Length: 150
Image (cartoon, one colour):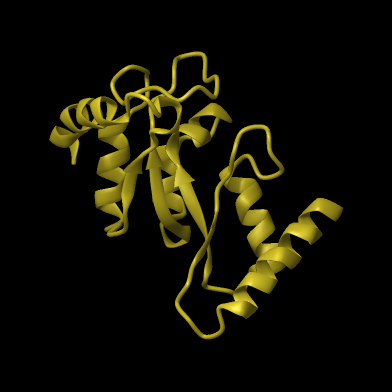
């Protein structure tokens, strides 16, 4: 409860500092942290920012998969909350270890079909942080795998 209140206070300060701008603050559910699931994000948003359109969710499909959420269902059910989409693959064991798209079990065709169905028009990016030394090659491999589904 205390951590949620402090987090909300910090977000409120940033919103105030951005004034009337269109800056969106995207909360990303992350395995092992205070907000892990899409449901926990929504509970946080409703409690602290129910009337604030600039607080949205960064929809990291791999993170959702790791915590047992179905990314396709989240996209279809929470489209209005999605500010940005992160993609990476995750293994069958659902352990939070980012893999190059195509090397795990994520349903990317379903994910991209859901994004299209809800008319998502924002950015979708591949997370490359575990691949600092091979990022260019991993990005090329990810594009080659994902392009037919986009």
